[in-house]
Image (cartoon, rainbow, N blue to C red):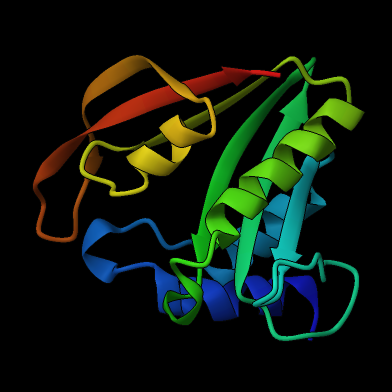
Length: 151
């Protein structure tokens, strides 16, 4: 199973259709062809299996350029939630970003995303909001919150 397959296996289980956040296989594959885009894939024990075969329990997809990193997607398979894997993924991302001499990591999420507490617990702070930025499957709009962390 390659990295795209591993990511899609988690994404298919983790992303609820009503929010419209799930990326397609093509979007994932194409993004990984762009220089500066990286994936971290972990198993149920939190081990990095990005370059190996194994059953994925979570992933993080990010893009870096000019000393900054953007967390594009992060997910943990529902069967593996509440084990600290999301926090572990963010800590791995921070470690990889530091190795690239990144100074800031940014992310954007819908305002009603329950992961807010996780991001704040690892040190991200809210730096902005975009009103009615996201459109849900039923056509309603949600605000986007932008977070950042200096590393």
